[in-house]
Length: 328
Figure 1 (spheres, rainbow, N blue to C red):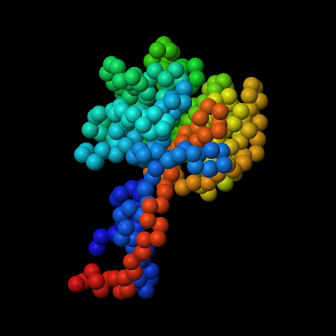
Figure 2: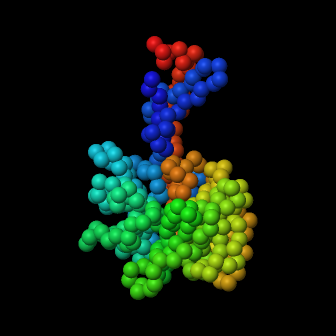
Figure 3: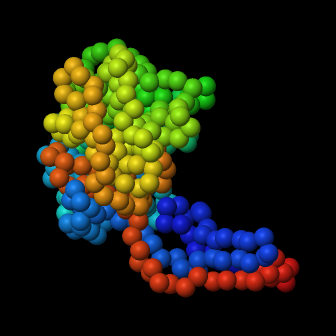
């Protein structure tokens, strides 16, 4: 029996079965889809982009004129990276390997892009290439465990990523940028819990990240790189922290689907203010570890990867005594 598939993952069927043998399923294959949309601070639509949305996060260039994101390739059944104008126009394919390329991060000066690819025997590793597609791709680290990039410090010294270690789960690591001439990678948050989505404040003093140390993901902030002066930012669940360009606000996606903003510190103080809700949307990203939005420098516009309804009134199918149907 064919059932509908979830917009987030084509391998997940949408159905529900009761104890008395009633099966309800969704026969529509296009009831919903995920789409990139520009919204303001109140969640009011600015425009929706005619761009295929992927399963990981979009990344804005520093000048705010372009963004890069993953896109499904039906010929290889994998995801590649594409660069577009912020309007969605002038798409240009960035990655070409027949593997999954995802979670891109733009360098602060707009010259390079680092991303994750599982072309190394299924292990996600970090790659870098010039944003103008000049030159070859460079593998930044030797393959060992899965690594996902999440930020690049404003001074270009550090690439932030999280690594999945079988002993300590996901940990936030720092890779000194290749041109910095500094030491080897080092962990900045490493516990028995999962720590993901690390991002450095524009002044380089603070690191925000998400951790499930409490039993579910919350957003935390601490000094960088020392790790003292730790504070919990979110209170009802949170993932995907992002800083405003001037460091005055810290955003995150809350457990109830709201995009939150918290007044953030500058200088030596780490006194994050009470978060306030900006707007609500259903994230189109595949996993809780991916950030479903990007924010402009001034914090007035958000590029969100959101689930939108295409056939909201399409009927559901009900089958009574469905186990008997399977025996026929």
